[in-house]
Image (tube, rainbow, N blue to C red):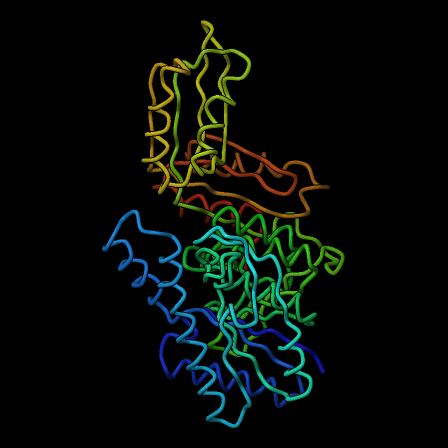
Length: 406
């Protein structure tokens, strides 16, 4: 008998029929003798509607009231699923984040989980055989108010609950059958991976793969929670996200990810002196703007050009912040380009194989795709290219690294 946390995303609970389908899946695990806890997201589209209402009333709304509004989506789903489970003979009870409690810091809208006091849930699992249906995405802040964890936060809720319950596995049900070598909508020959390491999944999530939220993978790696990603709509086996030691044959490249949510910023003719990078990136960090790829050109005439990327949504704030510090920095001008995409190849096998980057550059060159910025890590190479070449680049790289199925 295992203890399993089952997490269902918005598309899996989008309407009453799908909630009944989820209830049937949970019942199957219970009847197999497992102790089961469930974490649910809001029904598909609900959170977007709640966010839109907040923004329509006040673009600069109070983050505490925003959390009070957007957390309601999960409350509805958890109650409905508990009713559906009871209807088919499964003892179940819904739980909101504050009732457990799931304790977070006070960063409303993007809170981090500090502690889950799961003793009562464990007691009910063990002595009553009851299935707790827990609201994902939400917690309780230090001020006693509801907090939310940021978009995709239900994944993090599920992993954190699995760690608190000392679960054997955390099954995350989505609308895809697992983790693929790349987006199957772009590459028909993309393969589903049986297993992938935490490190690879973390890199893929951070560079654009939408399967799991980055923070959930970070937490799973830290707490050694085994994750399985699988579909709510088929019975096909999913992808296990596990420690590197569990994978015997390590692929050189496991996956190719892309993100069209990037914008490129170039600060031209920056004085080439010590501390200038800190003077530019410090104020951006203080404004909560995350900078990703950075390249500095060779200095000439005592000046240099600095190019970096930010999230496309952060571009207006970035331009405003750079305009504020123009006199302090003394740069000539700023140019921006929101029509770019980041394409990344990821694999733990890169650590022990040379030539991964050169294969990437050659494959792109053969398709006449110009590389604008390059960054690397131990198991990742990312390039910035024109957005119109995204699909061509992903297909070319998928073939170049021998990832095509069949």
